[in-house]
Image (cartoon, rainbow over all chains, first blue to last red; front, side, top):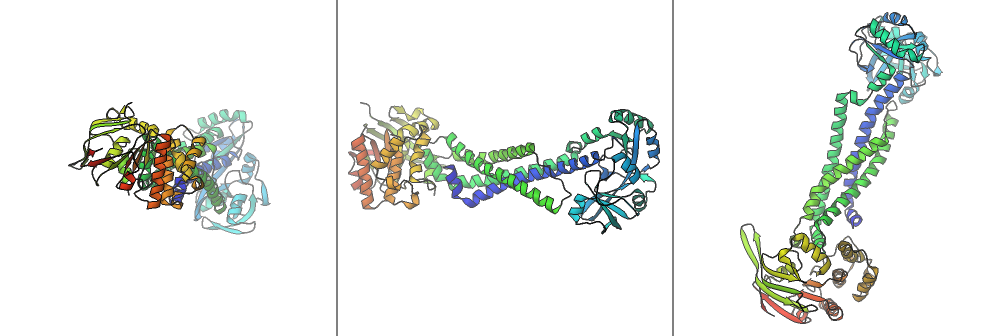
Length: 363
Length: 223
């Protein structure tokens, strides 16, 4: 009977399923995007291979929010700390000329290679001129960039001298001196990456640096990775929570309306069921099971929609990272079911409490 | 032997806003088990209200109602619903089949609600008895009035109720189908000792019954 009822009004059924599907897609894509971007950034930073990071006092662990108040000479100080193999300064510049915000890393190639082990070149080679730029393969694919082309970033024309493998720091690299000139931050850096002679010396090196540079943000990579979660960004958590609440509200309202019109339309049928001896619990269970069926189909459609949306977004914006996890798939399904049951409960209760004589007489 | 239905000074008052409408004003009725009783009377005399109370669809305002030994005055809605599920079958003027289900599913629904599961043997027996075997796969919109009413009767008797309550079962049927349905009811009564209480405006339909009672102004005036 539930299946027959659901198929009896295909448009209403389709709309209800769509609402639940949209709810699931919204939850999974929003969470996937936020965690994907955070984790991708963290992985690429970890991929540099450094053990310790040094930033100015009060600097955010989000590089894009950092300025460049540290003198490059601090690097010499850091190099003298026992068990330090190499130190490399980086100056960050943000560019938003192409719609998306790109973080450009100004690096000193020699020290960068010592700390990171060097970039892997897929095409082209290292900087030759001040206006040279290295792009990673994902950026190159997303923006249809080839070696030898010119790209305009920071209101400046750069010559693409190489395409490198992604996963080490940023997606765009320019010479440190060029970055300093463009930002009028001569002899400055946003951050220093420090490589230890052995990973076991990381804590010692960290302590030594903290002693010598009081007040500076000194973090080892493990600590940095633990910070790169949405729970350390209250505003982001609130934003994600608000979007999830909107998604659940959409599902709740559509199911409520759908079930309410269903029971109004089927008042006489409910009277017939009562004349056959159907209890209030039976009627309540019937409506809730019908809503749950719509929800189940909506969840499956939502999973399919999430997969399709992710594919579409990554096709259009390859530099994005969207992480879909089984845990959040379960959470999205539970939220959808919760919204459905709550939304269907009042209509179901109303249906169960209908007077059978009045219901049978309903036109 | 105790009567299967007994009412004493049965009253039912409906409250519509601030207005009280007495539908039954002290109805006294006695029906023996296996009896086929027709209830006739003008519109508004309380026939349907009497049927609804005897079927447990609504409770009495005052008076005594004993159905198969159960005192409805002491029973709440849940108790009456439970009683109706196992002991009462309804047949309505407008058939009241669920439009989204086939004839088979409409009949099986009664068994599902009763909770004893699908009984294929009983199902086949009822389908044969009512001559609807060939129509079981059809939805109500694809059945004639007579066929729909026979499906409704099948649904009403599939669970072997003690009492069959029929509210104008031929009211929406032509003469031929009316006769068919009345014959079915007669067969149920004669062959299976089914107790039947039938409301009708049609004197020819009433004549099929063992006994005819008349109602007027909420009372039984002759039996």
